[in-house]
Image 1 (cartoon, rainbow, N blue to C red):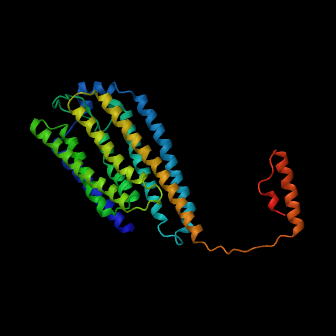
Image 2: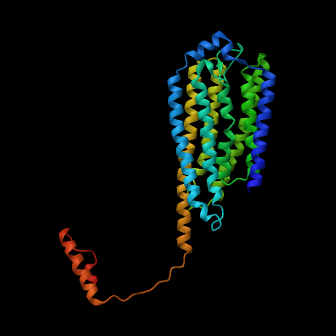
Image 3: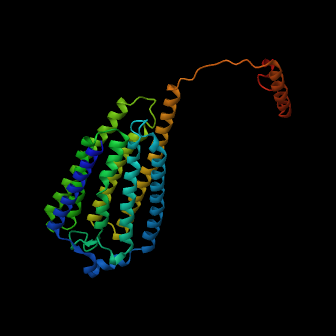
Length: 335
């Protein structure tokens, strides 16, 4: 139902924008370019690396867009004949959006000291005045798209069921970002504890989706193991993001190491999701074709072949068998 989907998108975008705006007004982050120590960290960032990431992502993005357009053009005549054809394009469209957002993130990081959404930690805790890559946090706000891909598109959960972990994920991302700027030590670690608790709740719900899918899905269904693996994979990757976040907050990573870890994980997650959905789409098309063939009523008709035609067929194939050095299997039974 496109109406409910549109309402869901409006709810997600509105709640995300509101949460981020509230967090921004509370912490009032300082732009990194305004602090000389923070600016030095940005100038040391290798622009060539981010340029290469952008080029690679643009290639993958164009591939997804062209594939989506071509598949839509091919399937458009079948919309009135086969139910659910249009629903098959939702994963491709969501992947296009995730790659587009990732391109914008890497483009901003490429600017280095002139980047728009990079702030300083205000000498908070053990981290000091290292850059806080707010643009990466903004990119993380498309995590709900990955949850929709894993929960709704792959496991068949309704948008209503997906909305809980989706909104909670956006909330704990914003809370974790605010922790970089909070001066009070107790409040800062309270925010960190709350964000990890919210991550744990969302992970439990997502894991339950995967387990329930494995219980009810028939053993012969296509990509039966791959689809729940997407859910478990996201839980694991989100946990790794949390490890990098904590390590950085404790001041045990340089800003370059932190940026490299986040960039590598962001790219790998999106590419893995794209490859997984290539397999899911292939399995779905194969299952659809098999179903159409099984349901197609093909009448059996026996045709008598004249004896002279059978003798000609036998002689031609017997010569072929001799050339190969083997007798033709079953040739003796033809006449």
